[in-house]
Length: 76
Figure 1 (cartoon, rainbow, N blue to C red):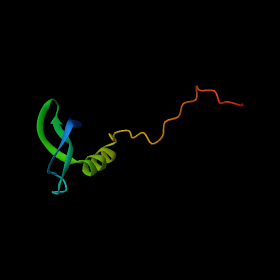
Figure 2: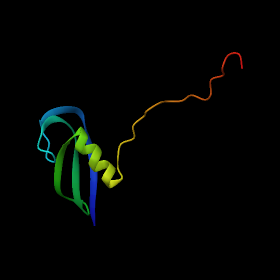
Figure 3: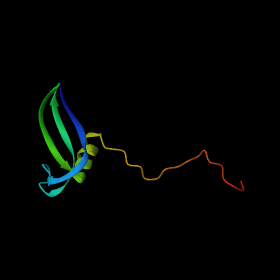
Figure 4: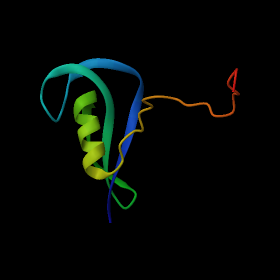
């Protein structure tokens, strides 16, 4: 069975994206596996990693706004 896994770099580096072929800051790597054997990989920029993650349903969650409901409001 084929699998796709994402691995993100701890320290992004500059290089050429394997997907869009642009010189960008590279954010992560997409690993292509057949059972447990690695059959290929793609080094991706942030835009391509986000697009592939969305297409495969493995997108990273992005916090837009954080809510704290446990604090009491003054004057209420």
